[in-house]
Length: 184
Image 1 (cartoon, rainbow, N blue to C red):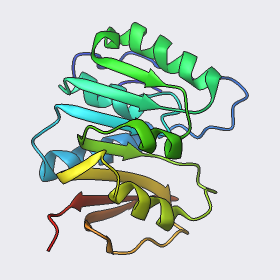
Image 2 (tube, rainbow, N blue to C red; image 1 turned 90 degrees about the vertical axis):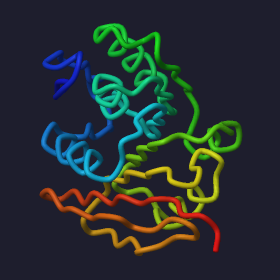
Image 3 (cartoon, rainbow, N blue to C red; image 1 turned 90 degrees about the horizontal axis):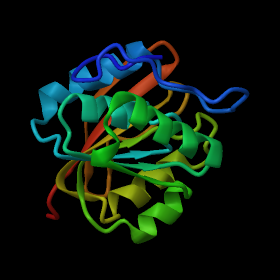
Image 4 (cartoon, rainbow, N blue to C red; image 1 turned 135 degrees about the horizontal axis):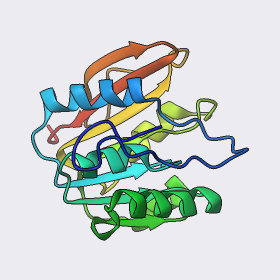
């Protein structure tokens, strides 16, 4: 796995051995960032939840994000994210929180321009998580939520203030992109 574009283009990222994580493939990451380029121009602050190796947040930093927070509950993965940030020279613009995603939503109170949430494919109640994150402080009006998930899991067109902008399928992965709208 490597960084696809930007200042760290071509650098290889470490992946923990014998880990149950499913890193986002280069093809899917490329599709995600292609979609993002068409829906938002503000990359200043990103959040990578269920970060695994940190590939999505690192890709955003490489492409010009000014700051990225990473949330991952597995301690081995947190160490790998920190290593990957050092390898790419992007550690100064980031912070790694080694906690589960729902816990992070209780203390992260700043909003991000882009939130990546790449949960395990077997995460029960994914639609409930989308509704929960949609109401959290991490998403402000205009923020984008990027949610790669199993194509066998149906997600709705809206969750509270979240409205689906795009949905693209790549193999078994479905990429759902939402924007938080103002209350009506």
